[in-house]
Amino acid sequence: MHSLPKSAVAALLLNTFIWGLSWTGTRALEGMGLHPVWATAAIFSGCALLLLTLRHRELPLLWRHPALLGVGLATGLTNASFNMAVAYGDVVRVILLFYLMPVWTVILARLVLHEAITPRSLARVALGLGGAFIVLYQPRLGLPLPQSLPDWMAVASGLLFAVTNVLLRRLHGFSDGTRAVAMLVGSGVFASLLGVVLSVAGVVAWPLPLPVAAAPVVALWAVLFLVSNLSLQYGVARLPANIAAVIMLAEILVATFSAWMLGAAELRPQDLIGGVLIIAAPWIVRDRRVAAQPA
Image (cartoon, rainbow, N blue to C red; front, side):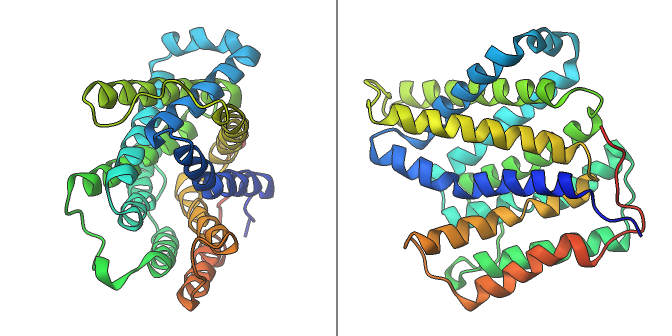
């Protein structure tokens, strides 16, 4: 039985660790008067500009290879729809609905990558989603079924993120930097467009003047998300899509435990039980050949 590539798993865990802590940056910027939509636009635009200073020769590849544009489109729409859902919906419901993503990934990986849907892959997804549901469940929410526009946007963002992951796996022949340029440029452009549309409509305030104190926070998170994105490229390109999707559920644990450590939430027995299931899902039910071809 082959083991999972440790470097790829570590890269995905680093990605989930940064995303799991991202709420602290968003909350800090919101406290400075920067709406989460504009905070997302500023951070990902900063990411894109930082990467383009290092990999500007990759930009023409986006026009030559429509699949790379597809990655940018899917990523940009993922971030835009998720942030809209978080801004105007119940955060816990949004996260639960977003993390139906492993289900979509298994289906898309079968259709696009021809990865087999085996009892083991289904068991992994069921175990991971079960752990996520236990951690996030609140009696007042009931079953995580879409009931409003933010709910549907959360579902859409999870589906779009699954599309992103499958496309990244399919495009493993391109360098990590090329795929990162596509993702970050798409994220920056779509988040900025969303901010403009909402500000013109009077839904959110324009971010001008930009608070001086916000600049170092935006810069810090731009660097962190750049590291996160490159880690995602590395991990997703080297693992079967259905396993990568389950590993990413660890983001829920990072967010939960960081909120507890910073006094923003309480640690409950259900967090520990669900956490064990999420951590165990990629490892205890493994296919005989899970090691993907290296990119």
